[in-house]
Length: 498
Image (cartoon, rainbow, N blue to C red; front, top):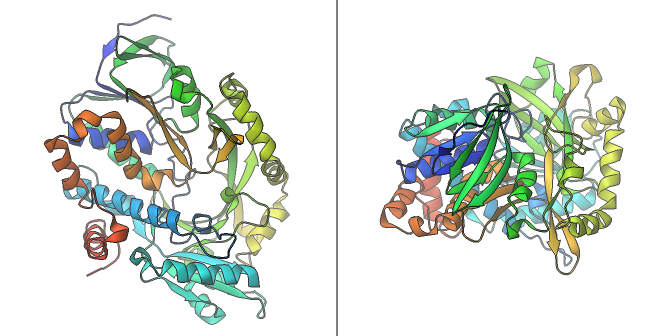
């Protein structure tokens, strides 16, 4: 391998997915003079976690995801996480609207479309839970306009496929939020990177694998190998962001920063059932989320999901989870083994021991027969026929394992930013609701890693220009929330709001 000269830059973004694209665009808006290098192992952008077939694509705003509103032991519903996610998604929409308004990225209907978000449950216990959830959410104006019904006739008008063929005496309930969206994060990522690529001092390179990173003299030296000719070179920068999806953990561990100690990953594969009958696709216009089966993990929540992929309306059901040792669809079967280090083995063992039911669940999912998958679909769509659906591979998730003083190690179902104390390097780990809340996550990262610049008059002014609600809580300011939603809905061509 020939060693080329070192490339000097200000920022290195590892991975060409939604997180790197979002951070790169934010930083370039805040400081147009920044030099940014983006390196991606694959031959195109958004080919792993951000791809439309791999990502849940919901535009997570907590309108329909029941795992964001757990029921407490006293029977009450905790809506704090749902409020935070709903607020964060509004922040994302503000940033996208700013970019569209200023013609930095392409028209919004290429990546975002309005679609109702629904929760649907059956059985007396689940119906009681959904009723309590609905009532609890009414206390926050971010969920204003949500409809609730236990009437099969009403629900049939919303989503006929879900009701047709169902037993008439079965207790059912549903909520419907017309403010929901479908986001194609693959298209959005490519739009962001196209906008970035047109700016000065931004280089985006594909088929480039990062094989090592080491800090020297206040700079990170990142070793990059060209996948086509095996030549390697070094990129030197003051700041490194690892946004490589399932590939982030191994690179974070290679950095050897103290903050990375104790972190591990638990990979989960996924599959969809994809509808192939246009007549059925046409009959369903909603994202319908249900409740996880008893004993199942939060990631197992299935949904009957209307999406737009490559300009075509699709209908998916799933995902069906599975056990894997790969961190990426294009990864190695040795990824999990290689990620086990002396610094995280204790957390991995303890988390594994406490999550044996999860492992059993994933193995059972792998062993599902086509008939068993169809049975799961029929719980949501009773008249489903096998010949109208085909199996499609979804993306891989790497759930975060972190050390815990009391329990040794815990498995986290969410996203986590790990950064060095000096702010010179950061990595994003985890999964849902990552993409939908990418802007909020990256703004938090900017505060951590660019603490000197972010408090400057220039950066504060720009942040408020890009995100009108910056520094304020939409969940505590109904008037501002209404104003923001009206603006973003108009710019992004979504719902007609006053």
